[in-house]
Structure formats: C-alpha cells, structure tokens
Length: 280
Length: 342
Image (tube, rainbow over all chains, first blue to last red; front, side):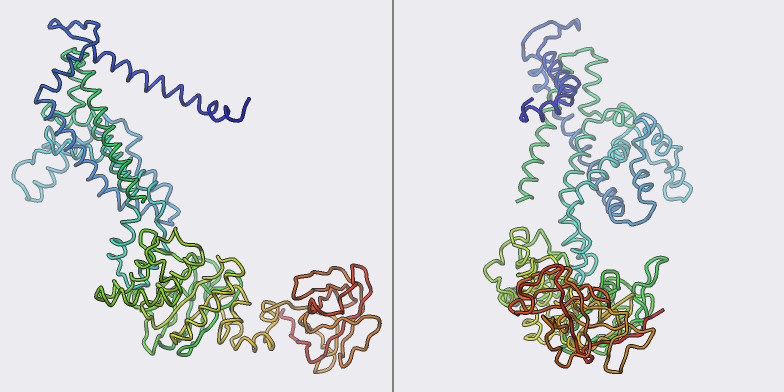
C-alpha cells in the first residue's frame, strides 16, 4: 500500500456514506426536476426545463424566498442574541456544573422537533402560559395571537436553532483569552468597553458561524413553520412539501428543492468570502 | 509614579493553604522590586491583587498614599505586562499601544505622538502597522511593554514577562526593561522565578515562600547574607553540609546546618596549601560539568557530595576526571549556618 493511498482509504467510508445518503439523492432529485408533469398529475420522463420555467415565472416563488429569508434571518439573529450570553458563560465558567449546564443548553436537541412545537403550542396558544400571564397581570385584555402566524413561527424557529447556535458560538470562541480582556481592563477599559473592543471582535468568527448555521437550519426547517404557522405561513420548505405530497407534482417540488439548495449554497459562498476577509 | 504599600494582604483559593498570607511589602517611589519565588509561592497572586484582577480576602493596597484596594482594575492606572503578553490579536502594534490612551480619551494627534514615542522607546517604530502574529516573540514582548508604559502608569507590573524568550534575547530584554524603567522613573514590581533575572535588574529582591516574604533586601544582601536556608538554597547553587565544620562562630553546633556556595570552594591539587581556608574535605571526583565560563566539579567527600565551581580558564580542574582524588577547601567566613527547622 503506498503512503499516498492511505489517507484516501481512511476517508473512503465517509465518502461512500456521504455519496449514498447525500450526493445520490440530490442527483436523483435533480433528475426528477427535469421531468415533465402532465395536467393529470402523471410524471413523464424527459430532459426539460419546464418546471424551472414555471417556477421562475411565478411571483409566489419570490414571495416564498423573501418569507424564508426573513424568517431564517429573524430566527437566527434572535438565536445569536439569546445564545451569545449563554455561550460566553459556558465558555468561561469554572463551575463544576459546567458539563451539566452545557447539556442543559443543548437539551432541546434530545426532544423530537414535533414534540417541541407541540410544547410551544401549549405555551403560546390563546389559553397558553404567556397569554394567561399577560391577561392575569392585566397587561392585555384579550389573548395576543402568538401561534398560527409569523410571530409564532419566528419564536419556534429561534428556539429550535438555538442549541446549534450555542454550540457553534462555543466552537468559535477559540481566540477569546481571559488575559487579553484583563490587559484591556488594566489599560483603563471599563467592562462594557472591554466587551465592545475586545470580546466581541474576537468572538466574531463564532458569531458569524453561529448565525450562518442558525440561518441555514431555520431556512430548511419544515416542522416549525408548518405546525406553528397553522397553514398561514408559507416558506420554501412547506411549499416543497405541499407540491410533492398535496399536488403530487414531483418535478415542480424537485425544482423548488434545487432552487432552495442553490440559495443555501449562495449563502455559504458569501460566508466563505466573508470569513476570508475577516481572517486577513 | 508613586510608592506602593501592601499591608496584611491575604488570599486563599478554595480550601487549600493561603496563596498569599498576611503579606506586608513596601516599594519606594521609582524603585524596581523583584518578587522572586518558586511557582506556587503566591507571587503572581500578589501581583494580580495589586493590579486589581483578584480581590484580596484581607489587607490593603495603597498606591501613592491612596487606598486602592476597592478600586476596579480599569481605574487603577497600573501598567501590567503579562507573561503571555496578552496582545490584542485584532489590532496592529500601534493600535495595541494606543489602546490605553484611547480609553483615556486622548485626542488623536496626542495619541499618535505618544504611541510613536512608546514604540521608539522599545525600538519598534518601524513595525507599528504590524499585527501581533506578524511579530517575533521578542517584538511582541516589546509591544506589550510599550503598551503598558504608554499610559504613563503610576506603577508598572511585570509578570514573568521574559520567560517565553530564548536565553540570549532574555538577557538583552532585561537590560532594556531596566533602562526604560529607570529612564521613566516608574515604580515597578517584577514577578519572576528566575533568580538571575531578579538579581540582575532589580534594586531589591523579595524572596517569597508559601505566601509570605522570606527575605527582602538588595540583590547582594539576599545572595551573600541569606537569612534562611530557603533563601540560601533558592538563590544560586549551594552546598548543604550536615556534618560539623568550622564556622566563624566555631564548630557547627548540633541542630544546625552549614552551607557554602560552590564558587567559594577551592580545589586543591596534590596537597596544595589551603591558605587560610579553615575547612577541608578530601574525596574523589564524581562528575565534571563544563558550562564554558564556569566548571562545576562534584566531589564525594566524608561530608557528603560537595560541588566546587571554578572558572573555565582556571588551571585547577585541568586533567581531573571521575574517580580522581581531590581536596576541597573553604573559609569559615564563607560558611553560612542555619538552625534546622523542625
């Protein structure tokens, strides 16, 4: 065995698995998107761009894109804002409960997405915890609609991507060094200026990475917009589902899926360009 | 520029023994003091308490007559050079040096002038635009020093700041630090575990042990007249002799231990005259260590294994090898005597 071959052999299992579960299905999906669906709903084998033409001619596609972007950006930004202090605390604490606290922070991952959304329905519903509290305190007179609308989806998405955001923030905090912050303090920087001038800039790679992962996950989320949106919030993921399973228009669903994938790849490309600039 | 006075300073981490134990220390205005001790002796904790990075459990820190014990770090006006340098990686060298001035709200022009001045002082005026990772270890260390003195602090603290440099650079830097400190007239405290560093650049040396100051004095005092066996053993090399030998006060009393520095021990070849050396021990050479300027000769004697140190150019060690019979001699006046602590 030549030494040059060895790394490839070690990589082989991962490459094979990745091809089987990722590359092949996507290629297959792309193939389906080139087929033609007839009015009857039957799919005809073809190599045509009909479904893409329909897709891009439809204003609804642009509305869906805007919706997805808006929701994903809101959720990811919210998750970064909420997750940052938690991640920073976890990064720094010397408490012996640190492992436990870290597990708590990512605990939502242990519950199925559906169960979590149902939990949110209970909390955010008209008779839910939040509204009961608001009414009980006399802050509002009638329940604030927090489900079956944008706000509900935004809240649910924020919560669902937060564990991932916290983990990415933690991973990205590598350059943070307590003594560097201490140095800033000895030079006369009060805590808030230490944060703005030292901590935040040094944790920026983590913030960008966390935001990106949150964004990608929120953008491809299906369960949360579907269940908390109550059929009133339309995003790319829900539309793909509807096209595939309700309209049974596979070529159209596949084309929309390819389009969504392309959008995410664009976001990733932008991230790569951005990090390259930060690094220099 | 101000004098520093620590009184009854104590700090304990968790359940262990105190890191700093009722420590009193006074550093005069413009003085350069070394806090010297083995790792874990509490010297760094003391420094961090003075800087305001660690709150003491008890005691006070006074700087220039003001009690600053409760003052937060950023209002203390103390320059600190970290062991790791702790430069801001996302700023240029000039940005690092100017940071403290920026925090003080100095106008841009004044800031630039003082940054240039500080960089010139550490001979880095050409490299102000570089990021820390584009600088060598020695250059980073200079930036850290320039950053700490640019704010013209009342007190300069140096935390093992030379230990990451190679030997040659370290020697060069310690001379520079000394010059800069003296030129600026800044009161300075230098924490180190390296006795050569402490002796070489400081006005006074405080030897610390287990959270207390074991002895404080000029480098010559602590080296030549150590008050405890710990100080004697920590500073420089030392022979420890438990057997009775001649001392200035006569024979070594029981319950005491005698010590003599290797470079005070002479090597006698072929029954040479010990000339005024009251102590004499004959034995065989165990090991010869040649370090260039000095040669260490370890000799197995009835008094135990003793080391003698002679100049590399001296004739006494020539031709000696392991197993060779040799005589050692030293004066009673050079013999230090300490009671053995129970």
